Image 1: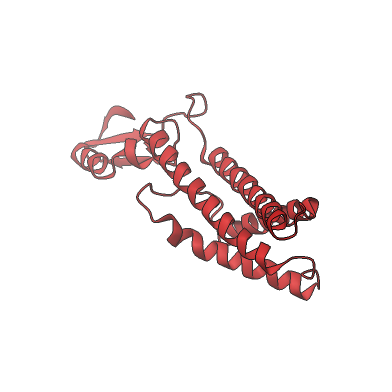
Image 2: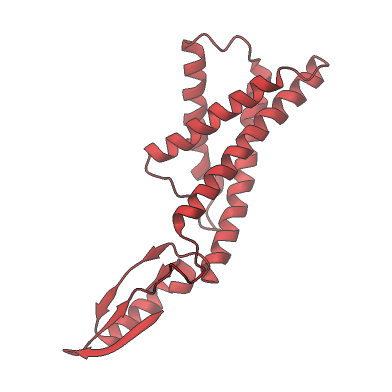
Length: 192
């Protein structure tokens, strides 16, 4: 935090620190990383569930290319749904119940993809057992991933490696101190 000591009418100003060269990750970089990791987890869940289900039930690996394609379409839809909802960044509190935040997103995407497959008459090749297994494995994989990301993000924010928000605060010195004490910049990701 940089405090500018210029006295102007008994006000101090707190100015933004230049983070372009300080080694601090921009939130967009973190968001892209999270979206790519979630997409990889969804594709892996589709492949794992499809392969596992078909090996167990039919004794063969099944159409793995179709599993991967389904996972890729699902991953794009999942990321698109988050962008439409205005949640391209994925910043969760480590204490947050990940299932409560993930369940609506996952369920909406599943319903949308299954409805699209039904109306396009493309759902004949997908067994219900595999889709249920994909639903469960994908949900759990994203839950674990989100929990790990939220823990890592909380640590990175507290160490100053990620700046979630930047702001300039102007006011009396005691108000600036009170603001800093109330919002704890090192823990909340504020770059003042």
